Figure 1 (cartoon, one colour):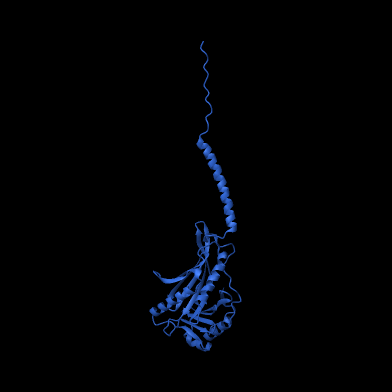
Figure 2 (cartoon, helix red, strand yellow):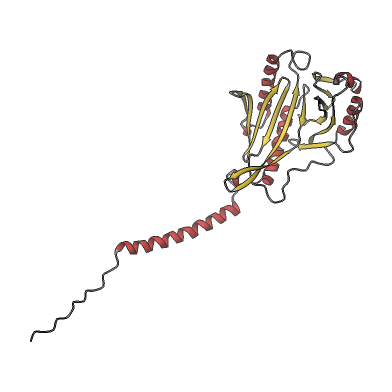
Length: 304
C-alpha cells in the first residue's frame, strides 16, 4: 500500500519590505505634524504677524495715525493749507475667498498756490508743475524708511510710500492747486465690534473752534453746536487737527469778498469762487463751494 500523501505547508512569508517602510513613514509623518503644530503655536504666540491677513484693523490704527501725522508734518508750511479729512471705514472687501474684511483710509488734502499770484494759476500747466514740486517736497520730508517717491506714471504724477506693517501712502493731483494724499490699510480682518476710529471730542485746541465760528458768521452760515473734528498725533509731540462744518446751498457772494474782513491780514493761498484758502497765523482756513453745499474747515498744522 502506498504511503498517504500529506499536503505541503509553506512557511508564512515575511511581509514585504515596503510595508515596513510604510509604517515607518507614517510614524515619521505623525511626529512631523505634531512638531509642526507645536512650532506654529509658538510662532503665533511669540512672533509678530508677517502678512496682511494676520494683522487686523485694530492693530493697523496706530500705524495709520503715525503715518498721517508724518504726512501732515511733511505738507505743512507757510504757503499751504493742510486739511484733515474724516477717517473712512469701509466693509465688504475679501481678505481671502472665505474671509470678509474692511479697509481703513485717512485723507490729507493740501491746498497750495501755483505761483501766478492768484492762488490757482491761469492754466493747468502752471498748476501741474507746482503740484509736482509739492508732491516731491512731501516725499523728501517723509521718514527715510518710508522709501517715498514722487514721479510721473501712466495715471499722472503720483506719490508713493510704504509706512510699514502693510500700510500704504499714495498721493495725486486732481486739479491745480490741490493735492490729495491717502493712508490706507488695504483689506484686513475687522475684529468684532470694530467700527472705525472715534475722533477726539475735544479737538486739538489752538483756537480752531473760535476761528471756525468767526468764519461761519462772516459767511452768514449757521454755527454747529459740535463741529466735525478730525485729529492726528504729530511726530514728536502735539496734535494736528481740522474742524469742519457743512451747510446747504451756495454763498451769496464769492468767499473772498465775505471773508476779507474776518482776518486782519490773511495770507491767501487759493482764491477762486469755488475754493478759497488762506492762513491766519498758525491756522489754515478753507472754504469749498458747490451748488449743493458750502464746506468750511479750519486746521492746525504740525510744527516743523
